[in-house]
Length: 173
Image: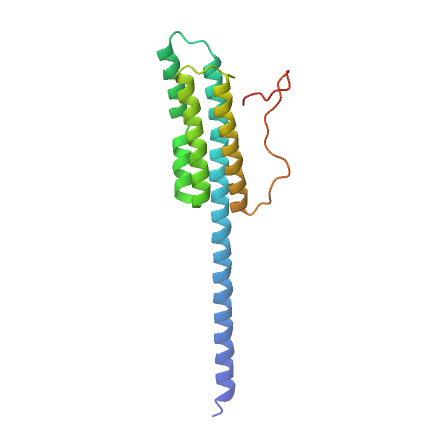
């Protein structure tokens, strides 16, 4: 019996099976990478949205009249707690690379300082308030830059900037 045709058929089948397994493994790995990228995009979007909404909420509460300083403090701290920023921050700590975590943590602490400043009675648009918002803006810009790099998105040609008020001065966000 001639074994050569049988061996060549078996060798061809083995090569075909191995090639198929390697292609499937590469496809699965590629899908895993894409899924992780989608997950990070979701987490980054949730975090940046939470940061934006919380900042607007804190500012609106600080501008509002309150029956007492204690009620003002309660409203501001409640807004911070209820914003979901703690959950969004924990998701960042679990998924994001360390530079993005550090940057998002910096933004978190900037918002905490803004909240605490309003609780202590800092007036909206005062020099100290503007300094807090400027620090938050710089921290957020750095965070977004790192997020974009992590997602493989190129840098922006324009930056997120504050709108100008009627006196051509930056209006606090």
